[in-house]
Image (cartoon, rainbow, N blue to C red; front, side):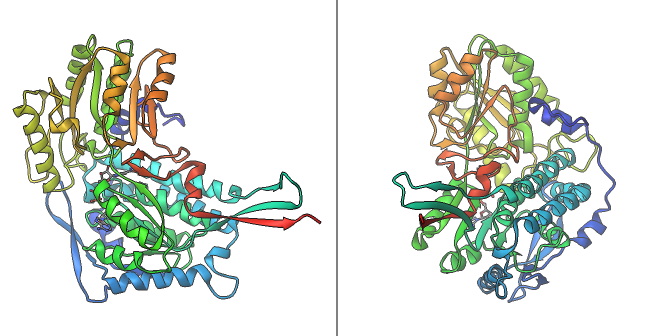
Length: 511
Ligand code: NAD
């Protein structure tokens, strides 16, 4: 593959990758099943475990230790001890170069183990293997990007405008962090938090999603193989999320919580964080508009729609959720988009040729089915799909809905599945108004050949990310994050490391 990737076509390119021959049983045997505390994998304090299921088959693929409150506190003890270390030799005092080199080695190891990580993600999350491999590349880039950022994260000096002082700023690690990740991008959501925390000199307790912990377990082992010292990263998978967040967020030693997940859970965590005035980064839900103007390049718009909607089976916070298409091109766009959706092959992500995997669990399949039934009952028509898929897994057919009334639930709620509702508009400003009519503000997409209109769109759209003629724009070098109820803070880019640093200002009397 060439170094250049066309953002509008990432989805299609990934589909061309062939499945590698990884022996699943040997791979699963390599993944640690314990809790990682102070560099050692151990059982939970009460011996409890939980199962991890393959959503394509319903089979149990692994059983992991389930951390208790006591284990969570032990993980924080380890993170605090590693931060300070003995004398001057704690993690917070390591040189930027030392941290950068660990990140760089981790990037190389994750890349070498790409087939294994991709297989694990397909097994526990369901995405097609080719897409999982795409996530390994994307996720690994955070390790490389922050390896490169680490030595460049320095403060500044200036003279006080009135004289009398020299002013110096320094970046210090914020301290021990709790990182909570979701199930939809099991590797990338971890690397996007862990890499900048390592770069800034923080120590961590990571709580991976209960549904997809295996990738995080193997990633943590890979970081240790790359030379990360004991206690810097501790991993506490658990069947009870609050068993981890409650004791740690009540503990004065914790300094930050970074969360990616749904807005309702983010709101609960923000309320809890206020008790100790914790630093927070919140990457929450989305309801992305995808606007197609009358002068759009139709091929590009359809390819962009496939990427923005179907990456991860629609289970992405950046997934296009509402399609607004100019009335003069609505029929052409809908017909071509529906044909491309109907061409996808639903199945087990480890089977050659699969281009759409199952949803994560029964609850997700039920919730998508209810949203579609609600829209159909209110007068929408399905151009393709509109029903659950066949088989043991939690499949849902790629679906395109037209004639969707404004009061259908799909117009307001995050779908998190392979369903595309299409609405029409007649005027440019009406499109912006419809797009902004949501409490969310994460991703948005605009397709037009008119450059002035693209810039007007970015002026008018209240979203943290805007794709111009591109359906996938996430990259380790870019600041990712939302506004409104999509959250606060940015991950990736130069902004990403700042989330894990505190600025200290030193005023020095001018001699
Ligand atoms: P979720 O909120 O149910 O869970 C996310 C994580 O939080 C999981 O690890 C879960 O175990 C944990 N959690 C749940 N309740 C908790 C509690 N009370 N205390 C502490 N931790 C708790 O979300 P999900 O279903 O895993 O993920 C889907 C959601 O995440 C969608 O809304 C999606 O838009 C959002 N998301 C956002 C981004 C982003 O960057 N903005 C990225 C991916 C997903």
